[in-house]
Length: 107
Image 1: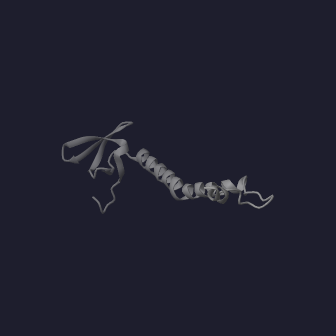
Image 2: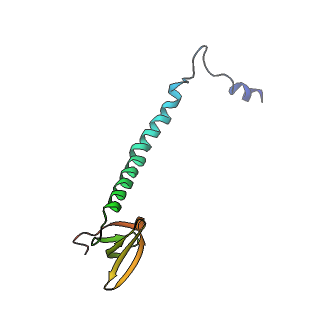
Image 3: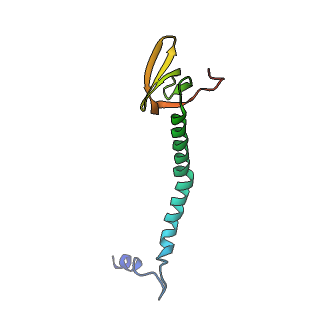
């Protein structure tokens, strides 16, 4: 049992430091930088572009909802968009659930 205690004892040489201070935080700083540039920043750009898309929607636009519903915008409020999905059939959807504006190929 004593040999185990001696084996786990002080292994460092005399007067050597263990590299504390800034060197200990360097891996954490590098990991945060990687997460920022690979995950956080692209997500922020995507959210900003989606917000601009939602603010640019107007009557007459053809939209696609996140559920796959295609339709023509007939009415707008701050939070709700009225969409005509067939002649004289209108539904109200949340503005945040709009995933994009339909292109000519999707119409």
